[in-house]
Image (cartoon, rainbow, N blue to C red):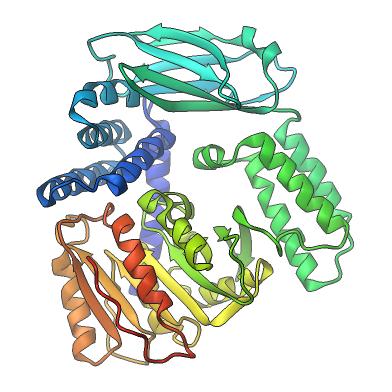
Length: 481
């Protein structure tokens, strides 16, 4: 009952954050995601940071996370920009603040060929453009060809309708340059066909398909779910899925189904879809590496509260989990944590459904989760010991009482986590260890709640992959951090 109440609370928090962040006039979830991705990348590459610097940056990031959870998107994005500047070389700090703080909105952000209007609204996250030289803005095309530029030192609106005749179906990027620092700050897509019209056409074609085989019916249902990316994408989905390549990909998938083939069986790379399990519509991201074996290990990746299914495949640690999948040849299956948390049967059925993409090695199915996802992963370690081979929790652990057998569990807490402190996690882990449960506890020194994930993914995945039902005694793995 406690876990179900927590699930409902987590969903409510996520919805409130989404509404408040989207409603802020000067900063959106996309702006926060853009700056966070840059921070994550810089943090992963910052080998020269001292322990004290890592500690300070982690704490500042966790404070920004708390601002985000309070619905104060404008303050959160400014705090994140300051952290990004701290990670930049000292001589480019002010230029980083100037360029990263540009907030830009294209209307429309999906332009259909033949449209007659395109506008750009500009502001700055700090509320006023910083003193100093003007910021140079430029729009570049898919081959980095320059299409437009302007210098700005104050909020501005531009009518870009004159560019439309030169545009072709593709993604166009707006870049901001301050001093020697240049970074992308916004984008718009040009599409050959209205995405909603494309979705309607694809749906009609799928409905007319004769798909008697269960695998083909499941593939058709998956393709239908992907039409949401065309009809009602979220800001983050628009960021991650350029519109015209998406339309062409779905067209190819529908054509394969019409020909009686499962288009997802030989998939490599990323794919977003949703699947209905137990009356729940579960959105997910899946990643299949080019290094394919038969069968393949699977890692169930569960994000934290306030996040979504895109975090593990494309964010945490600058997409470190995806790189590890490429190295080791495992499937990443990242569902919305809110839909599987407190619902072990849904999680079990979701794992089974991943066989649509590749043969899954039932002896090597793992779970990893962060924060709320860590609580979910540890709960599943207890609830699904015959389904999961091993699990790992990062900055989150369920208060599991001693009970039925569980699969091996690795628990990480962060030394300077102000959101889920080590003082909450270690006693829970110690209680399980004292009861002779197969639990290992590790402390990530000089790390905070969120930025801990990237550096810990490699040792966590190495620990998980060392476990197999065919090898009951895994070799010792150095703890690392």
